Amino acid sequence: MRSRILIPSVAFLMLVVMGGYFLVNPSYEKSLKAKYYYEVGEYKEALALAKEAFSIDVYNRMASTIMAQSITSLKYVSYIDDAKKYMHDINKIATHDVISDADKAKIRTMCNIMLSAYIKLAPSVVTDTDLVDEAARYHDNFEKLLEKVNK
Image (cartoon, rainbow, N blue to C red; front, side):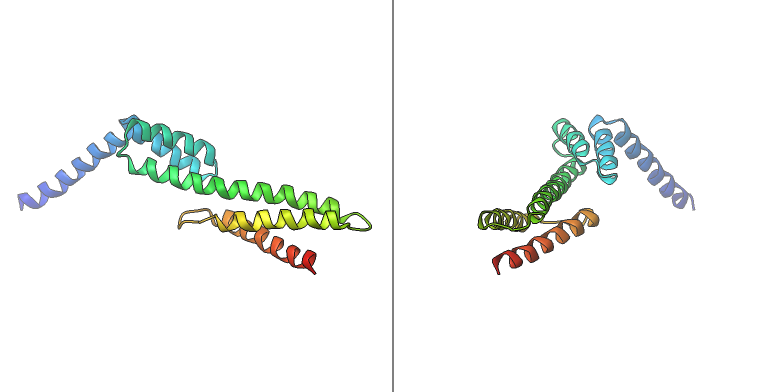
């Protein structure tokens, strides 16, 4: 009967020691902060903290994972920012009464740039679905726009 009581006590003690290690170790402390920033969508801050944590302890898998995920998310953010800029430029061109062949070529080039950039994006299971969905919507819009311009 005594051994049954001892096992949970040892397990609890191990958890306390491991938890204390994670909270006191600067690498894991930075990893936890990085995870928080990643979860709230502050990918640049998450990446910076994860890099710091990884430089302290190269065996910190949490830091390594957060770095990789932040880089992926930042690629999506960059794609979406570029898409917004190009759509703004295309909308300015579309306000002209007559769209010249040169303007059509510009639109075609912008669409091709964004379509090829989309192919390079590779979401993971933990990539924010809002980012993935927004990028996919822009990709679809650029495909449709390219079809219209090529007619």
